[in-house]
Amino acid sequence: MTRIAYVNGRYVPHGQAAVHVEDRGYQFSDGVYEVIAVHRGRLVDEHGHLDRLERSLGELRIAPPMTRRALRVVIGEVVRRNRLGHDGMIYLQVTRGVAPRDHAFPDAADSALVVTARRLPPFDAAAATGVDVITIPDIRWERRDIKSISLLPNVLGKQQAQDAGAYEAWMVDGEGQVTEGTLSNAWIVTAEGELVTRHADRAILSGITRRAVLELARGEGIGFVERPFTVDEAKAAREAFLTGTTVLVKPVLHIDGQAVGDGRAGPLTGKLAAFYAAHMKTQGESP
Ligand code: PDD
Image (cartoon, rainbow, N blue to C red):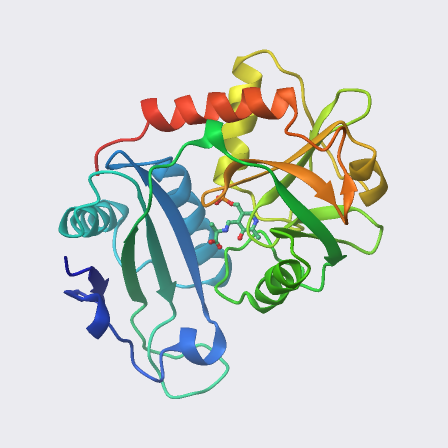
């Protein structure tokens, strides 16, 4: 089956989908993106992702390429044309558009929109196997709340993790506190049993999965604290896990080679993964 991409007003075969060489995303990373999971043909937390997209665009003063209503039609059409009746992923990217290379904003450029889709094996958050993480210095800029396409530190960090035989790298700020992973948010259950994830300010991306898991915990009467935690605290924790659109809820078994708890997926992580799996099944609107 031919994959179809949406590029600036046209639905084109994925292999022929292309943008202009002077697209500011290509030259300056002057753009933002979102990744939305599709589960059983339905978008997971679509509105949360579109709200965050609008916020990222606003922070960078990039004009939305179209209304939210029109964007939802385009996304729905990409889901349909790619026959994403089961599980998959939608990637969407908005850049400041095409203009002669000049750092300052162009006077007249239309924002550029690309939407692509990918089919994936069925998601099952509750069956997620555990992974290992390493810790690395966080060398990113100070506006990590913006979902910018400028991802070099994340790319380098993820590769460093892979080279070390780990799955993810937790980035650590100047105070020795974990900010987040290269493509996921970081969580621990402390030695005292407290569920902790860093508060969402400019230091991290406010993950949509993170938010959903917090709300599920709240609904189930599970207490939590949003605050920074150190690498030492994480290594002494009972449990640790990651959340994100592409990782769902993933137990962390080792940090820098040191076992977290008994080195197996923890019970609270398992519970939250099961709640999230149920959340993926029951919510989500047909695009
Ligand atoms: N990454 N932190 C970072 C740095 C991320 O890049 C992501 C998502 C997250 C989790 O956010 P969410 O729950 O909204 O997916 C946290 C996407 C999936 C990616 O770059 O592929």
